[in-house]
Image 1: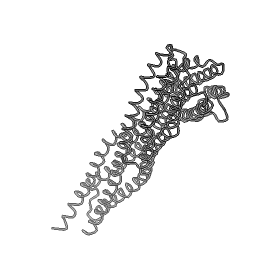
Image 2: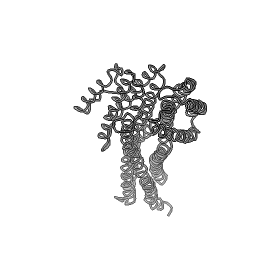
Image 3: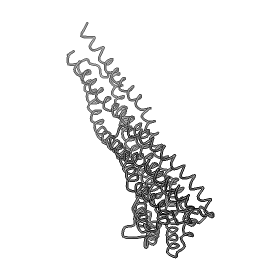
Amino acid sequence: MPSRLRRLTAACLALTLTLAGVVLFTATGVQGTWSVVSARQAPQVLDATGLYQALTDLDAQSADLLMFGDDPQLAALRRTSLAQYAADRTSADRDLQRATVDAADSPQAQQALAGVLDGLGRYQDLAARAMELNDRARVAAGRPDPTALGLYQQATDLMRTGLLPAADRLVQTNNAAFNGSYNRQRADLADVEWCTPALGLLLLLALMGLQLWLARHFRRIVNPLLVAATLLTLVFVGLSGTLLSDQAEQLRVARHDAFDSVVALTRARAVLYDANADESRYLLDQDRAPQYQDAFEAASQRIVGLPGTDLGGYDAALATAVTAYQGDHADVGFGGFYGAEFRNITFPGERAAAERALTTYQAYQLDDRKIRALVARGRLRDAIAYCTSLAPGGSNADFAAQDAALRKVTAINTDAFAAAAADGRGELSTRIPLLAGDAALVLLLCLLGVRPRLAEFRR
């Protein structure tokens, strides 16, 4: 009898330790995942998109500075562009430093980053020489010095075929790392979610079996300590179940509801800057104007995808899609980064902010057609002035409005991501000690519950 009692008790203790170990190990793993994704992997994605944006705007400002020439009426815009060029250089250097630190543990990120590191210095040298030569030549607006234009062509080709694709690969690599962490943790939670009730049921059956065995052999109907251990086991299983399901849901909200939109919107913003740069290149380099128009069209399709349309039919197709969406919010008839966002609207205020971003995007696209119409009528200088105008109704003013709208809807999702991460970590910081204490009490109560019975055999 004493050996059988010890075996039954040992089974209860082993099941308690197994159940507690599985749950607590998983919970601490989720805690580590939250730390990794919120403190490292999400910022890495944002740093990479920031680098892409700074690089493409750097090239846009280079084109603008060459395009303004020595026109006195564009002198104020030239000063603004010079200041922005300096700010972009600072931003690119800062983001590049951050990305270098971020890539320390990732060979894929290091490989993508090498493409940026190798080309950025050469780009800046070519662009600086082009601007210096153009300034010396004192040319008219839209009539760059041929030698300066040749240097800029080398610089922008390097940017568009080397630096920007490398920066985009860095974005995708960092985002894939975040997705990998998320998928692994969700899979672990799914496994433990069915395992916990099964282990909990086995432990409850073992405790009840021990209770019945003691009642039959020692003529005591109830062992209060084992009853308490049984109740605490029920509490442990209940708390574990809600914790695991809550963590799975918070991870889903953080990754898919919030950060998927953050990625789509920040990439849309970066590509929008690239499209804006293509407008400047189009005005600066007439020999390559068709190439840059095609690039603008491709960028537009990445932002708001409308398959089967070119720039001639893009505005009408976009207006039709927007009208259909306004009639039925489930009818999102456009793709691209905006399409991904509109299919993932989740949080309060997000729909209104996204709709504002779409409206300002339409206005910016209409401005582009006006720029091209002015060029077609031989009014190049007017096209340059309108393209770079920050006055209300000017193209760059509408671009700034689009940029502000994008930042607002991105901020809603960024805040939601931070809130989900904080809620997930907060729940874990409370539940892990509680569950550990519950399991320790179950172990103690089991030992104390059988101790008097074992002592009877030593008398």
